[in-house]
Length: 115
Image (cartoon, rainbow, N blue to C red):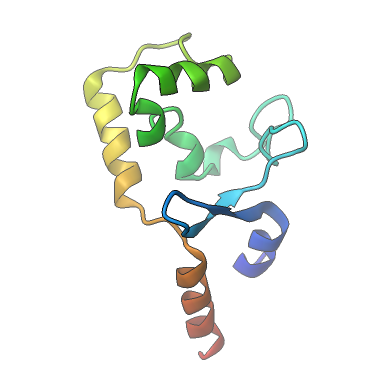
């Protein structure tokens, strides 16, 4: 499947804090990920958006943010504990990956179409 069809089928644009729209995976009506079916159906190739959860800056920003996210995710606060080093590495990796914004997507798409 090409990128255009994948984005159309499985992604949506989400407005961020500063009004910039960035690409995100769609959710089902119950808020489960579009790739969730009694487990992740794309686990081995899941995007950084998923593999870095719950170590997102927005969730790590305060104990209250963590508590809110944990109330919606049964996997948080259970299972293996992660060291501060592991969490820092995850946050750094996520920060090094640029968000795909609507503007950058249009630009990249125009480059590909011009080839």
